[in-house]
Image (cartoon, rainbow, N blue to C red; front, side, top):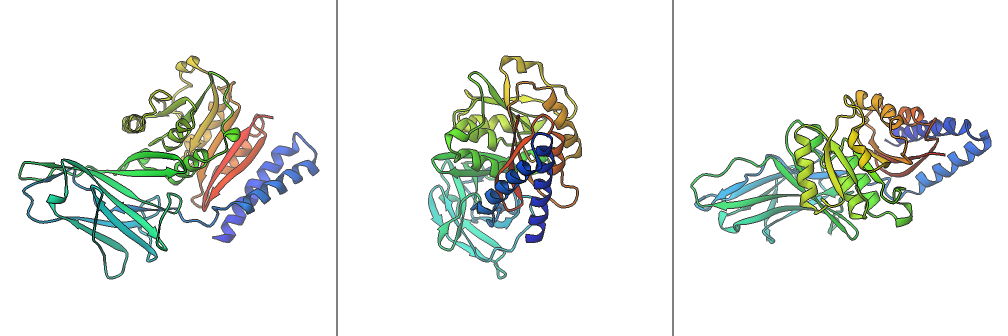
Amino acid sequence: MAAYEEDLEARVLAALARADAAEASGAAANARAAALQMRLDANAHAAQRLLRVRFRRAPPVAISMRRATPVKWELDVTDDQGTTVPAVDVEVRCRVDGAPHPVTTTRMKERWLCSAPAAAFTDRCRVVAEPWVAGKRAGPLDVLGVAAEVRVVTGSGDDAPTFEAIRDLSFGDIQLEVVEEFGDACGSHLWNAGLVLASYVATLDETKLPDINDGGLFVEVGSGVGAASLALAARGLSGDVTDQGRVLALLERNIERNGAGELIRAVAWDVVRDEVPAWNVLGSWNVLVAADVLYSAEAAASLPGVVAALPDLREIWLAHTHRGAGDRLDATIEALSATFPVAEVVERVRDTRVVVLRRQ
């Protein structure tokens, strides 16, 4: 892992140095690259894990009050792509409607079981699984907890599973609640890049927030569940969040759930196939935000064209998780370097980087 990180950083730095060479002397480029390396080395989050507690099967949306047997919740710890990860040093604690409930582990300690009788559920309540590490509740950039909403019904049968998970994101004074869906739609999940970017902007010094004019907006492409934009809205910034298909409806729900409707709006936009929407005339986009969109070759190839069609852009905020051979972050930085020659890696958490590109 260390060798891989060194190689990725070396390639990013090389791309940045090449961009600088067009604007400044080699000595100036080398000095800036050295300063960037110092920033990376000093980053406090570099060694943290990015894991999450997951319901191994979707929880039911409703429990019958006549149910004789307890409701059993089976949980495990995975990475953001759903791969189960051994986590023997993680303790999972469960609460049903605020009341603690016993949790047992399997013999190999790779799964947790929480059992609660139907009487434990009120009309509408929440089942919460919290991860604890070394006796302390884990933060979202260590191991992310999970919750589900359940209601009690008078009938004899239990309703179908919700296929949803609720992620409570606590970043200092900012509290967000993001719903993600089980299933095949990539945009319906909270990926690491969106989580890291949300955490970064939520706790960033006000003077370092995205550079937006009075009356200007940010735009996030491929917003998914909208964590990054919700964090920006929590900091008082206005913008447009975009996605397509059924993901758009989930995005709208998360905006409403967090009371952010006055600051951000969800709009359908497929950046790969559609031109820049005409509704951009309602307010100039000064900042483009994109979290984990470079995994797609089509999206990565279309991004420079989107940027070229937005003359009011001042900054581009990219969050990206490296996933092996063919990574596109450094290539994207280089492709945008003609108009955005100033690039800075402002945050990294394990395999995820946040890069800010600025005009000269």
